[in-house]
Length: 124
Image 1 (tube, rainbow, N blue to C red):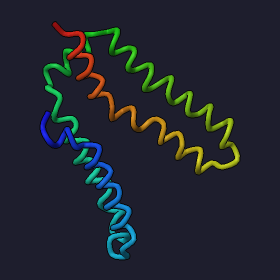
Image 2 (tube, rainbow, N blue to C red):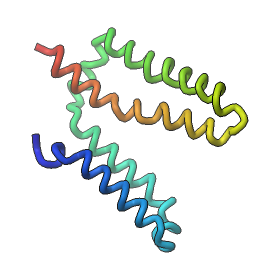
Image 3 (cartoon, rainbow, N blue to C red):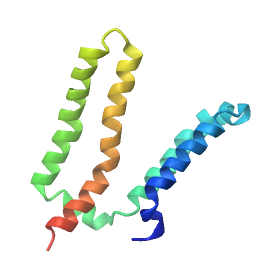
Image 4 (spheres, rainbow, N blue to C red):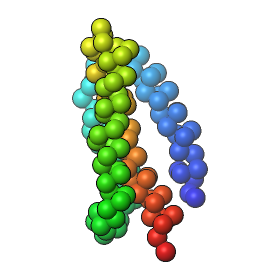
């Protein structure tokens, strides 16, 4: 395990704190809306670099894993988030939309991690 992986949680926590502090500066706050999406794209690109393309294409042939992944990420979780929002946030549309986005977004980012875990656990 290299040092970036070992300290990943600490790096993320420090980045969040740095972002919160930097957001208090007027100049940074005024341009933050323009740089968040490109930096988010760079971060996700780095995450996806760890996946070999050939192995990724091979994962589509594992029908059980692929079907479960699709069902959980694109059917169950959005439905569950919508139901929870309907029950508790019905009068607050902005919060409801934000809650649904919060519930579904992290799962899509974890797909590569699930893939690496399954490959390590089930490949001979």
